[in-house]
Image (cartoon, rainbow over all chains, first blue to last red; front, top):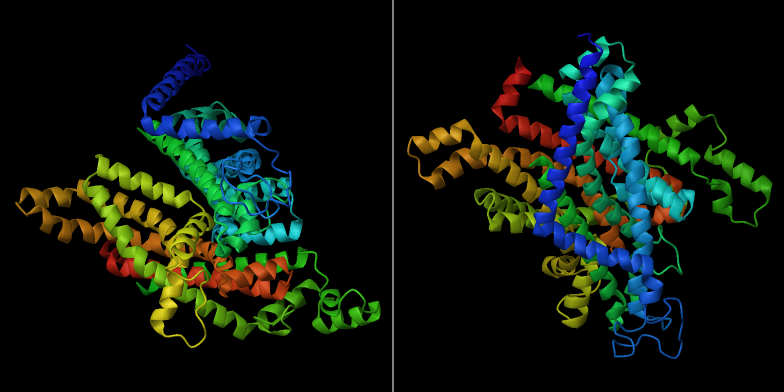
Amino acid sequence: MSIAEIPIEDAAAIQAGRHEVGSEVFRQLVRSPTFLIGAFILLVWIICAIFGSSIAPHSPFAQNLEGINQAPSSAHLFGTDQLGRDMLSRVIVGSRDILIIAPLATLLGTVLGTVVGLVMGYFRGIVDDVLGRFVEAFLALPVVVTGVIALSTLGRSNLVLIVVIGLLFTPLIARTVRAAVLLERELDYVAAARLRGERSPYIMFVEILPNVFAPIMVEFTVRLAYAIFAILTLTFLGLGVQPPSPDWALDISANYGVVPAGYWWEVLFDALAIATLVVSITLISDSVQGAIEG
Amino acid sequence: MVRFILKRLGFALITLWILSVIVFLLGQVLPSDPGRSILGPLAAPSAVRALDHQLGVDKPILTQYWHWISNFPGTSNQYQAPIGPILTSALGRSLKLAIFAFIIVVPLGIFGGVVSALNAGNPVDRTISVVGQTLLTVPEFVSGIVLLVVFAVALGWLPVTATAPPGSGFFTQLKYLILPVIPLVMILFGYIARMARVGTIEALDSDYARTATLKGLPRGVMIRRHVLRNSLLPTITVIATQTGYLIGGLVVVEVLFRYQGIGSLIYNAATQHDIPMLEACVLTIGVVYMLVTLFADILFSLLNPRIRLKAAE
């Protein structure tokens, strides 16, 4: 048997094994009540994000200057805001922007972070030291502060928001991937690939990457929760999603000034919507972590 | 030990220098026109050029970097006043808020984590973990606004702003800070409890804990003397690294509750494009973060003989 034959058979066996692990994780998730509750809440918000305009009783943009700041009633279950817009409709449609921006930003950060982490962990030495210092310098600044600076400079659009959050998450994700790669690179299959004369990019992306996929998945779900956190916070500060989009954080930012006057419904339902969304992501990420790490 | 501290100090200085370069370069690429922004849109171009020259923004980049560092913190464009006094008084106010938050959350978080670890795997542990994890991801402005609606507006127990009238006594000031502190506490609780839990579980699993149990030590004594001493060490480091997060949280809480701390200072500087102020604030945060983590590392090694001995070798 030549050397070249072994990896192919092994690869098939490993593929099959991996497939089994994947379906086992799935079976565990479906049985976990935390996951089911989280998935259910998230599903409700996804449905609102996609079909929001048809579900909402009013247009989220329709102003009614004769019915401003109205308390919740049968006509407006969640009341109306300072422009007389129906809060229930704005809460329903408000799920859309955050559910588009947050996953895209997290995906960008995960892809870039994985590449940087693979390079740092695989090459180690000087590359790792230099990149490591930069990662550390960046970590000294809170995401919100860097985000405020970047967005107030680069302009305020959803695209900029995605890129900024994605880039800010890159060093954090890189650190996790690097730690996982450091363990993998000492294993025999990497040495075997090197002996076969494979190039470094092949070893990194074809050999090591599939084996560090589980920690990357966990990292993605955890970071998604933080992305939602960061994006909503930046929007609250006036630097994220821009008016007149119906957005939960934006509505709170626009209306919290009138809370002392007693118009609590203009912020409370948005706040509760945010809370349920982040709780659902947390429940999901918690159970994914539990299922993968056992 | 001295060598260990010197090495850590060296690393901190290098990281700080990199941070200062990043901050400075950021200030360079930010599209700002200092002369124009001070003099306003109607000023003559020659006057703008003259002021730019006076400010030194037309000099080579290395000269400017040196000028910036040697004159740190410099003058604010927005206030037309030296940054130093503004920054220190804002930092002082934020420090009040931060210390208040830590005094509440550190014992609470450690207690939650240890209780969670002692009940590892059962419903008590699951509840504390999920609650902590959830608190961790609810943005401060969300919990802040709910607290504001309930305790300041509906019940009227607490004030809606964070700034007490000038000349108020200690307890009045404290009363104004209660609502702003709670959102910070909620988030920090999650982190600290999680770390205390992990540390305690590791210590409970250790050989020395088993030996202590086998030699017949009561569980309470074993936990106090052997487990907690070891498990709380890593928690110190975590608490220190949360300083970075805390400053981000301060931005939001200070804006929401209209409190003149370093968070709202950064926010105003960024949105008003006051570059010198922004650079000074960001570098100050970096220095504070480095100092706190350095202090935690040294404290950690002083308390932990294993690291102390390893460093001495």
